[in-house]
Length: 577
Image (cartoon, rainbow, N blue to C red; front, side):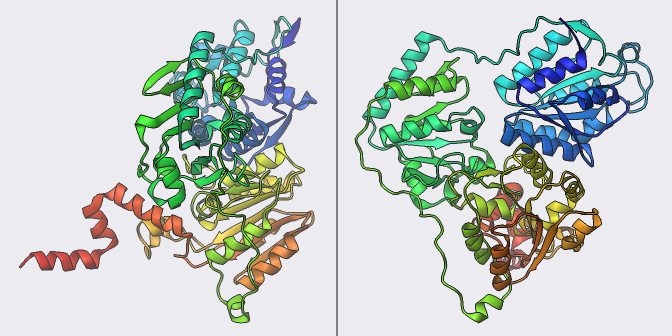
């Protein structure tokens, strides 16, 4: 059958479950946008800029499974590339579609706008190769095969892919066979799979202190349910890295908390570091996930399971698909009859009503997160900006069915507000709660206007501590470079011409916080809450982490000189004699 190239691409996006396309219109993608507008299964969400659109597609993909982003050639691609790189680092599947100049102009090297005016049409493609697992430039001859190849790779690897769509071929019809997109997974070698399952079963059965250490891949490749069943069947406690918050059931007695190297809870460290059969699921010991490489894993007893390979006793077995492996292991491993100790702290309990004086004192992080723990509920989508918000939320036990979104590895400040837009478009019936700092929101605040235009109703908490607290903790406590201009945040909805019902709150103490949260508990409207906090107040784990960052980034001598200049001067005076 014959179908227009742009319509064929839309059809394939629908088969991936994509119903919304984020982006910014430009002259090279308008012909394709006409096809999007005509498609009842695909809606275009216009963003304020391409970077925000990339963040929104990322947030959408984390809830929906896959996201899609539309740019225009050159200026649009490079504006979006930071957001695409973040999706690559965090393993988020986003399809990037770039409307490029007409094919004849590309082939002739025409000197066009949005290019470097040198006839080179490979440079942008080369840039995007660094942050995508598959790339292509569509022609009428390769359209069906290349679209399928690239989208299948996005399905398999769950990372961004990049498609260049020339403006003059979107309405060209091609002959296709009518088959659906191949979304099958590569199969494991049966003999190798059986051998690995046998080895794992034996090691789990023989272990006295087995444990699971789980990272983001468990969610990405949809094996969290299998892991929970394996833990239950064999009585295996599990801990998560802070890069995969709340993907496992944190209400289970087998949940052992968050493992963050030396700065994590002592009980969690002991469980993981002294395990005689530690099974890591897609674990990446990054600086963020390991508190600057302070993890202490016994490699003699460490089993590493990745998407398509397994390492046992330091011997690697390639080509073993993770879901197939865990399904077979769950079927064959013997039941372990062990007691199930309660390893994690209970959910936050109601705190006693403080004295009147305490209620009126300036708000602190300790007070804030104690109250937030009571405010959050099942089925919330909770979004934490890198810095104080993510640091506090990652150390809390969240409601069982809540979904948590953050960007701890790439850590691009301002990510979460546009990601909130994406997550809300993906799941508009769920309550979405964002926690973001004043320094971060100033990068992407304009996307609040899109949230308003789309008539979405999130609750946005803005932590106003007068600048970059996480940077102040690392270096420059009183430096001007860590200051930001103090905006009137609660008036921004009015600035962006909010027409529907919305509410704003200013919170400066615990009494006001309690009252605000009570009003928001059954809140149907868009709400913006400004929280006034001291510049150097922060969750305790962030303070510890910031000190590790400073020592690692600057070295001990420079760290002493920059962070403790008085002590450094006294030391130099002492050794001079």
